[in-house]
Amino acid sequence: MTNMKKYIGILSLGVLTLAIGCKGNEKKETTEDAVQTEEMKTEPMTETAREVVVVMESKSGSEVKGEVTFSEENGVVSMTAVFDGLAPGEHAIHLHEEADCSADDATSTGGHWNPTFAKHGQWGDADGYHLGDIGNFTADETGKGAIQFATDQWCIGCGDEKKDILGKAVIVHQGTDDFTSQPSGAAGARVSCGGVIE
Image (tube, rainbow, N blue to C red; front, side):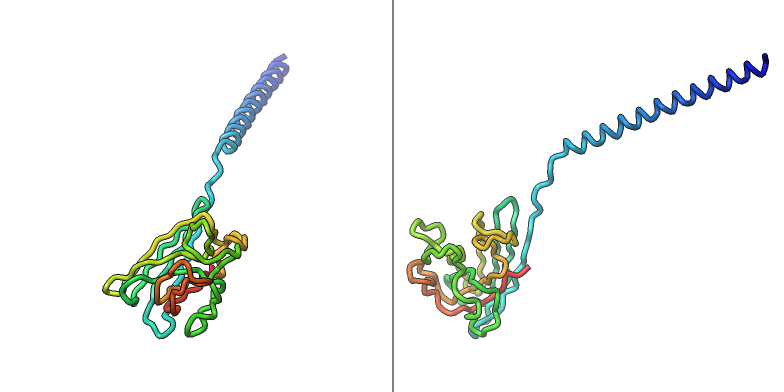
């Protein structure tokens, strides 16, 4: 009889242990489910910002140098450009077709970037403009100049031939873009060049 009591006691303890073990597993599964549910509620991350920095070279016998930074966030590309060594006054700045600054006069960059085959004009003009027609900026008496620009009509590395600025060149001209002369605005020599490459 004593052995039978011991056996029943051990059996009861085993059942109790098993019950506690099962209860613990249920709690763990509930916790994991809660974590998964919480993960599903997490908002998707916003698109990562992209940035390209272009170092500008002197061209056409000038001493113009500078740096242009392009950054993209939430579908808008912003450009910040700073230059030194310019003649005081206004200068045109454009994006050109090819990121090739090998020619001494930067003619290796081709014409203005114009994927929509529009006529040359001032940015936003109802009569048309090239997607490379950024505009004019002013250099001070010390030859320093800067310009900021932003548009949702460009992208950085998106692969869309009508928007992607990778593979293009930044050109600064000796003179001012008149926004009417075709196809380039009669802005004069190309005094600084930089290729927009990733």
